[in-house]
Image 1 (cartoon, helix red, strand yellow):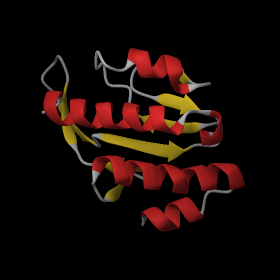
Image 2 (image 1 turned 60 degrees about the vertical axis):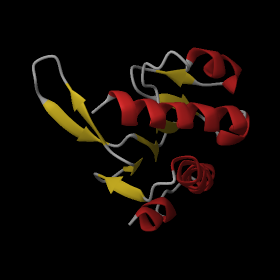
Image 3 (image 1 turned 180 degrees about the horizontal axis):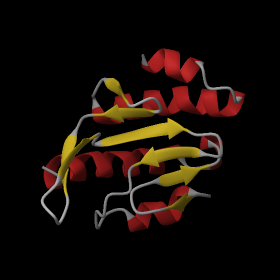
Length: 127
């Protein structure tokens, strides 16, 4: 279960951030959390289509309290994301992931906007 997974996170800060992220994602998406594999908490679902025709079921948005940082699966290519990401606070990102060392270091209102935008974009564009 999601609760069991988060309770088992060893690092105290990362565990607390995991429960805080759980509250934020549930509130923003209105979705029930679901474990996707052993370490990703996902909300909603979408289908990713690759250029070669393959498809992959994936959470619309999600997170994982990894050892080095909190990984949030919210980078989606939305034209709306660059502006709030500039105001978020310390973070790094990759193709689809946002990495945050501690949730206390970022602006939660801005993070909620990023999550909401990613969720809406994923539900509309990635079908």
